[in-house]
Image (tube, rainbow, N blue to C red; front, side, top):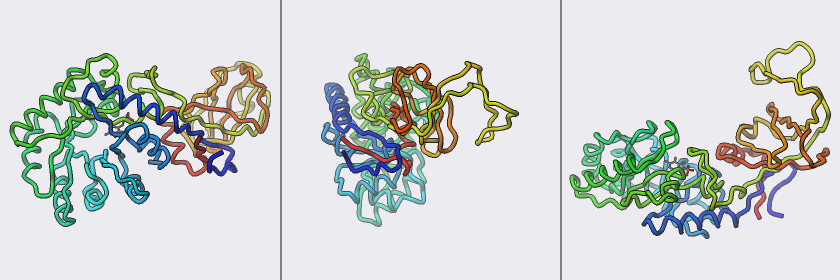
Length: 361
Ligand SMILES: *Cc1c(COP(=O)(O)O)cnc(C)c1O
C-alpha cells in the first residue's frame, strides 16, 4: 500500500496515525501549562503527509531549520504560521521574510537585514531573540539581551515577538527550572525596558517535556518546539523513551541479499576498511550473518536499531550492511525484510536518502 516505489528494496514505513496521536498527546499534555506547541518538521524534510498528520493532532504552528523545507511547505499550500529555527544567513533575509512568519535570531546585523528586506516587501517580520542559557550553540548571552532587544524594537518592519532558548543540542545542557527561570527573567526585563509585549517565551524542544512530566515547568514558558517527541516518542538528551508516546511510528525495512555462516574474524592480511578506518574484530567463532541492501550512503548506521533484539549490526560499507543473526529466532532467508527502529539521526538521514522509499499507512 502507499505510493512508494519499492524497487529500492529499502523503505521507510510511516504510521501517520501514530504520529497524529503523539502530536495530540503532547499538545494536550502541554495545554494546562499554557504551552503552545510548534511542530518541528526538519527531522523528516517536511514531507507533507507527515505535516498533515501533525496538524490533525492539533499542531497549528510549524517550524523548520531549512529555508528549502519552508519554501516547499508554502508551495504545497500550507498556510500555518511557520518559524525558521536556524538563525538566518545574512544572504537569505529576502526569502526569510517572504516565506517565514517568525525567525530565531542572535545577530543584530541579520535582524537589520531582515528589517530592510521586510520593509522593501511591505511586510512585518517577527523575531524570536535567542538567549544562550548555557548550551553554547546559538543565542546572545543573557547579559547582552537587553541591548540587542532595544535595538531590535527600534527597527522598522520588525516585531520583537519573543525570546527563546535552545538546549541539549550542542553542549548537551538539560533544561531545568533554573535555566528556564533565567529565560523568563530575561523576558520580563526585555518587556519592561523596551515596552514590547512578548507573544512567546520559547523554552526549548523535546528535552523540555521532562519538566512537564514532573510538573516543574516554570510559569511563563508558553511555547515548546517539538520534533523528536512527536516523531519518535524519545528524548535523546535525557536518553529517555517517553512512556506515553509511540516509539514505532517510523520503521525501516530492508531486504536481505545474502545469508551465510562465516568466521567472525576476517581471513588474510588486513588493511583499512572502505572509509580508511582500521576495523577491530573479536573472535566469536562461526556466526550466521545477513547482508541487507542498505549502507552508509543511506544512513549513519548508529541511527538504526534492529527491531529484533537478538540481531546485532556488525558494520556497513557504502551499500552493504552486515548483521549477525545467529541468535535470532526468525529463520531469515534471502529476500526477507529486516526491520529497524530509528533514532533521530537515523530518521534525518533516511528522509534525505533518495534511495529509500517512503510508505505511508
Ligand atoms: C531541531 C530544533 C528543535 C526541535 O528539537 P527536538 O529535539 O526535535 O524536539 C527545537 N528548536 C530548535 C532551534 C531546533 O533547531
